[in-house]
Amino acid sequence: MNRDGIKVSVIGSNGIPARYGGFETLAEYLTKELGSDLRITVYCSSLYSKKERIKTYNNAKLIYLPFKANGIQSLLYDSISTLHALIRSDVLLILGPAVGFITILNKVFRKKIITNHGGLNEWEREKFSFLQKRYAFLSHKLAGKYSDINIADNYPLKEKLSQTFGVSAEVIEYGGDHVNRERITPESLIRYPFLPEPYALCVARAQMDNNLHLLIECFIELEEENLVIVSNWGISTYGQSLKEKYMNVDGLYLVDAVYNKKDLDIIRSNTKLYIHSHSECGTAPSLVEAMNYNIPIICYDVETNRKSTEGKSYYFSNVGDLKSLINNLNNIELAKLRESMYDIAIRRYSWKVIGRKYYDIIQRLSRN
Image (cartoon, rainbow, N blue to C red; front, side):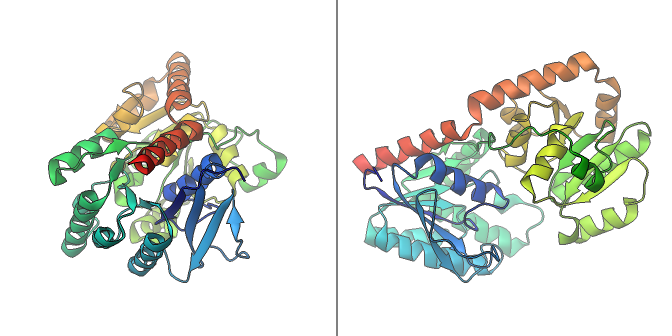
C-alpha cells in the first residue's frame, strides 16, 4: 500500500462494516476514501455484529473490544480505545466525546486529537436526566478544551460550542451518496405492499423529538394520503405505544426498522414525498441520504434543518402546518423541491467531499 505513514485511530463508533448509524457510516466511508493514504485503525465493538470478525476493511485495521459502544458500557469502550490509541497512534479521531475526561491524558502523550461533537447539544436534551446532562456538559467541555481540532456537523452547533465552551470548531457534515436509486421488484412488493401507491415517507428512530406522533396525527386527517414510517418501534415506550395504537389504521404503514440496504433503497427511492421530522439533530445522516435520492423533501422547522437544506425546502412545526403543506404541494413545487435538494446533495454531501475535508485536517495537524 502506498501510504504516507500517519497513524490514525477512529474511536467511538460501533465499528465497521457499518450496519446503521451516522458515526458507523462516517467511519466506513473515511476508510474507503482515505484507507490507501493513511494507516487507519478503527475500534469496533465485538457485540455489534454476530458475523465473523474480520481483521481489515477498506485497508483499515480493526481492533475489537468486548463492550457495547452505547449506554453505560460506552464509558469503558471509549476509555480503553482512547488509551490504546494514545500509545500507538499519531492522530485520534474521536466520534462523540462520551469520555471527554480521557483527553486530559494527552498532556502526557502529546498526540493530535480531533473530536467530532456530532450535531447535538447533548447537555440540553430533554430525554436526559439532570446527571446525564451534567456529565454530557463536562465531557464536551473537556474534549473541547483538550482537542487540537473540534468538529461540529452543523453551523448552529459550531456557534453553540463557541458560546458555551469558548472553543472554535470546524464544520464537516456527512456524506449521503452511498445510497442507490432502486426500482420496485416483485419480491419487494410482497414484503412492502404499500409500494405501488403514492406515499409520503419518514425514516426515523422512535423517540419523541423525531415527532412521529405529529406525522401520524396529520395523516389521520388526510384520508386520501398514505404515510409510511420506518422505525425501530420497539426501543421505547413512545414507539411501542404509537405502533400499538395506530398499526391497523388505513393509509398508515408503521414498518419495523429495515436494515437490508437494497430494501431501504427501494422504499426511499419510490416515495412521493420524504418528510424529515427530526427536531433535535444536526446535519442528520437520514436527511442527507434522502437528498441524494433526488426526491422531494420537507422538514421540521428548526435552524439545523434549514441550514442543511439551505432554506430551500418547505418547513412545518405542527400538525396544521404539515397538513397545509401536504394539501397544497403541487407537481411543479415537488419537482422544484427534488431539484434543489439534489443540487445541494451533490455540492455538499458526497463522501469524496467529506473525506477530503478530514484528510486536509489530518495533514495540517501532522505538519504542526
